[in-house]
Length: 315
Image 1: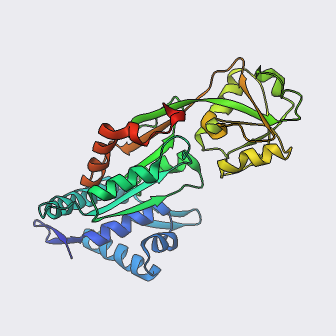
Image 2: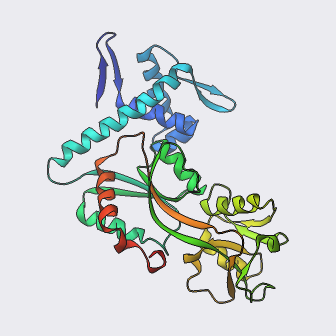
Image 3: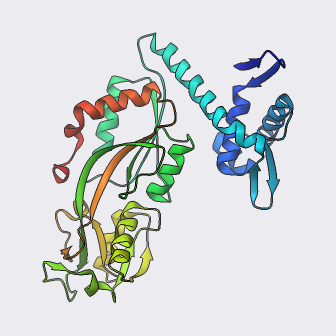
């Protein structure tokens, strides 16, 4: 068990106390932090109390709104995160001396199977670094949730869709960009048209992802820029099912073009006539955190071999 000593006060801070503290602040709940750490709640509470006792101050306050940081907790949090990152980097460096990269790579991703073959990319990584444990996470809140997880240190990297504004604190690599297209049922009044202006769609019901997904924000911005409103009838976190909802007449939808290439039966595909929208896939890491050796290894593969993992829709 690793301890950090401050000689002036003979303070002993254990790394797992910092880890539990960071988990509680991320989750704003001792219960959810315990679930995330796969330990009982009493262990988390005991660790945080021990940390507070060692530092001689209160770090967290329980309130009806959840667990909140005190002033001391707010001061400690970035230092705790940096300490945990440094410890992980040190461990990876020492293990790497034995000839094989070890540790864990925590990746998150949005649906992009028709654009980037993520399993093939991770398979290549595993071939080169078989002793690294891979953990792949999805986010029920889309790219926005992946960004939060990156900044909180819950993920090492993420494949995500971002709008024009880049969230602060991220380092991003653009992997591929494709246009957004409109899909309608084959029996729709616009099915025989090649394109349609947004003004022709204000009375339509839309199928879309919830707020927080990159494709949703692209479309919302386009309608807002045109000073138009639209109605979203159905929200789904599984973007792959959108075509089925459209086919069965529940509404129309904008999707990245790779998701309807080839065009599924029962659907027609149009381009927006007055609002060019492009959907981009990025590989993102947190630029304010230390980059683990595992992440550096995957980034080397992306930098040197990316074309091998892109589909024809992305080239």
